[in-house]
Length: 190
Image (cartoon, rainbow, N blue to C red; front, side, top):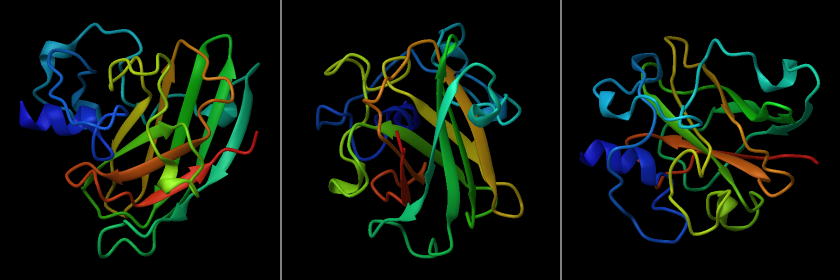
C-alpha cells in the first residue's frame, strides 16, 4: 500500500499540505506503469494516462493552450537535460492534458499533476483540485503517469470529464519514486 500512497499524494503531499494514505481508488492499467493495482478498476476520470490517446492539441472542437517545461531547482541530479511541452484542452469531453518530454531516464516512471499556481510561485504550489480540500487523487485532481522509453522520451494524455476553466495554470513533472523532486514545470498561456 505504500506505493499507492506515494502515487496518489504526489509532489510531496496532497494539496491540503499533508500526506495521506488513499485506499481503494485510482486507475489500474499495466500500460500506465501501475501493475498490481487491480482493486481500482472502474473509476471514471481516474485514469492516469494513455500514450496512444488523441493528444490535447489534436482534439477537434476543443480550445487548447500550450506550455513549455522549464527546469526547477528541486530536480534530482542527472535531470539537467529534460525538455518538453504540455497542452491543456477543454471541450465537450471535459479537460484533456498531454505531456511530452525528452531527456528523462530510460525505463523510469514519472508523474505529472495539474497545479493551481504558476511555476514562479513555489514551483507551481499545490495541485489543482476541482473540489478544493477534496481528495488528493483523480477524479478530483488530474494526474498523468508514464514510463520513459529507451531513448528517455515520455508521452501521455489523460482526460477528465470536468473542465478546469482557467484555474489549472501549470503542470509539474517529477520522478514517481521521488515525488518531492519536482523536475520541471510548464505554465499554460491562456
